[in-house]
Length: 310
Image (tube, rainbow, N blue to C red; front, side, top):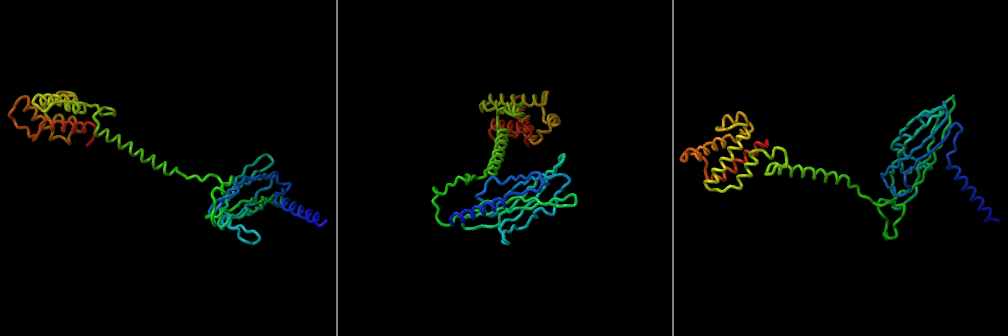
């Protein structure tokens, strides 16, 4: 008999606790809905829990802002701090035909830590409404969760600690991917710049102009007198094609193509060399060393000028 009595009392107490946890709506409140955090375990100090409360009330009742939780307040239970603080409260309002819907976004932050996992709860909130000279309140039920320690106390066998409630530990690699992509972009631009400066093909704009072609042609010529005559003739063709008419001296060419001003002295020496090669074999031209080597370097500098490289 005592066992039956004890069981009945226990059942009554459990039933009373369950009823207390339910949101008992005032007739003037149409509905109450809560959207809780996606999980109820694995929270540690500093974590933020967000819940959404949707309350629909009849006209003309309005929410009383003074009844909302105040950001920065510590939540208490039995006059003891729970280590949970209200972080942010925002309210959205939408009016219907006969009712008004309030959407409350509540954020809480955990400010406590234990050496073992322990239960905790987002406490119930009491939201008040007023209208027609009377007030009523709606109780938002509490929500239970677990606070985990930052470090494991004692030894742990990892094979026995594979809780299905704990999601996989994922590392955020988005920042490293952004850095990698930025570096790849810089590398690509650098490679294109080197190809543009050093390349001899005409893959990119302004790479297939007369002096670029001449620079390629001079690589195939020998260093003998016949090769030098052919090289000088080929460079003359490049000057004529660049200017659009026959060029016989540097001044008129530079007036028409000021982009070649950085090699003005070399252009003067080239025309002296041309006069020596074709008309006055004994005339000085001012070029020291191997003439073919100088011609190849000269056409390369002219190629850089026509590409806009100073």
